[in-house]
Image (cartoon, rainbow, N blue to C red; front, side):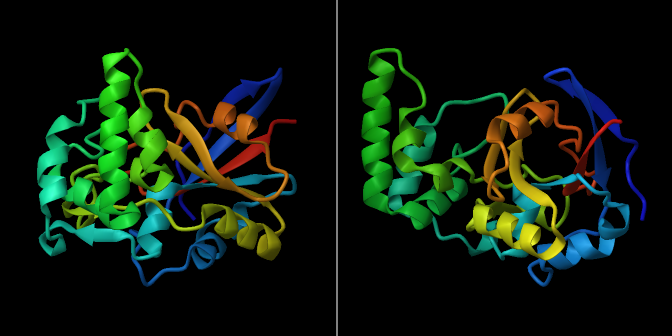
Length: 227
């Protein structure tokens, strides 16, 4: 199967190769394990680690919501305007993505998070809103975040149960697996992994986003120790 040219990175004095794997455009009709079997199974070697991008995984779970189907309520209409502009994307700074956050965690929690966030800013502290609102709110990608139709016109919620998905893949294929949330300005988080897989290692080995952030269609990446 076609794949992008791999790149290497040193972690604790050991070189690792990252091999992004190109796939078709994923949809809710796909199962991520089937996709790995179809596009990556023949490339896997003993000791490899499988990395899966969080948004494509969410798409296979039916978590991409067309903007036209989102009914924005009063809470979202008010609160989105107070979300700070950030370099790594729109996040909840749109009525539709804020509404998805309300749908995910509840209006009361979002209102409380907004209150705590505002109080935090008064004392110069950032990030309180997302600490209170929770991971699912933080993982929401606004419409236009994805450059790939039809998902450029969808709000993409965070994947459900990423740790369980990673463990299911490990149990089926025998390879450690991580679900990663990565951007192009240095943000890298493992949001779920198979049992025993080091979160700090995965965030170091994938920190430069070897899969890219555009229309590469590489939702899977294989991490391999260079001998």
